[in-house]
Amino acid sequence: MIIKTFARNNMGQNVYLYYCRISGEGVLIDAGCNETDYNEIAAFLQEKGVTVNVILLTHGHFDHIITANEMKKLTNAEIYCHKLEVPMLEDPELNLSTIIKQKLSVTPDKTLQDGDVIKFGHAALAVLHTPGHTPGGVCYYDRESANLFTGDTLFRESVGRADLPQGNSKTLKKSIAEKLLTLPGSTNVYPGHGPSTTIAHEKQNNPFM
Image (tube, rainbow, N blue to C red; front, top):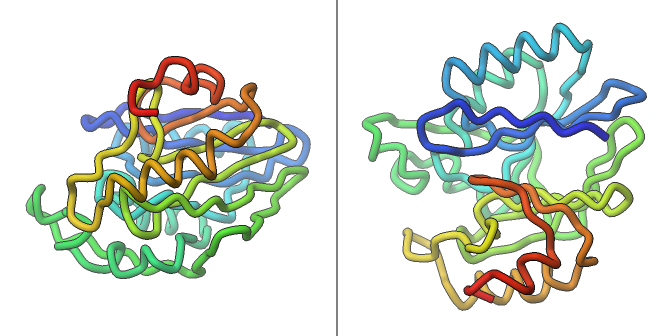
């Protein structure tokens, strides 16, 4: 599996292209692109011959969905999110896009729940429902390749904010403890912002644990 990160935007969010080396099939995880990211993704897909059929959203805050509709048009991919996150995606007040003076609304093509599996190429991503940052926040876990995409649930030596509307700190800590820290220590963690890490590193060094 190959992970290509795009993060040239001005809010530091990571957009991940996760694709199968053999088949060229992949998914886009979050769509917080600016124009530079968008153009780089379009060029990369064409150059490498990668096909994106699904855009997986970790949660509905505007910085992670700001170009979801545009990426859908570019790739003809469907947009997936957790079923509890639909109201946030569709409501500019809830997804906080009004802060940047936009009225962003994204309608998913399919909703997910805990335990669902998205298959593409030779890969499979399991959906881990990890509420706390938002009610329908999720992580995507590839057990075979030991890769975990955590959105704004878990960062390197930090965790997601729980002081935003619909956030809950107790729920967030429970999600991390029960769904993420129980994974093998060698699991690679790719967060929604900042550098990658591992589960083992977070167990030892994350002050919020």
